[in-house]
Image 1: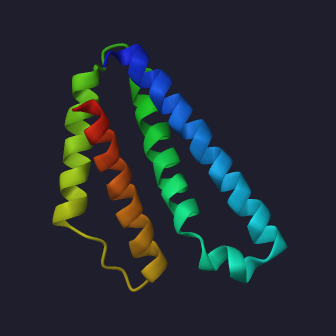
Image 2: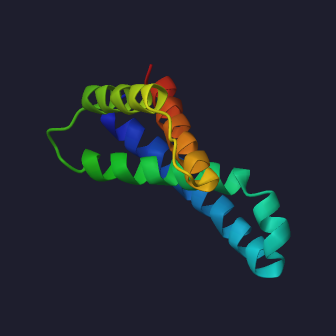
Length: 111
């Protein structure tokens, strides 16, 4: 995958994730208890969007290559595996796991 293909794919993933988040926001406004009981998908979408935003911003630098992104995705995936979130907040831990999974998904796409 070249840099332009990666940018296009990440832009698509980010827009799709934002759509999933918007649907969650609608459910949240309608029935918060129900929305939070099924928030796993929204958390995954938020993690995907966060990783995409970060990588897309990095890719604006002309010197950054797909290989640089692969190395960062590897480092972030390994960090998430080595140092799992251990906050007293279950939601925070779940979000950190989702972000680690989003990095791993990106790494899988790049390999």
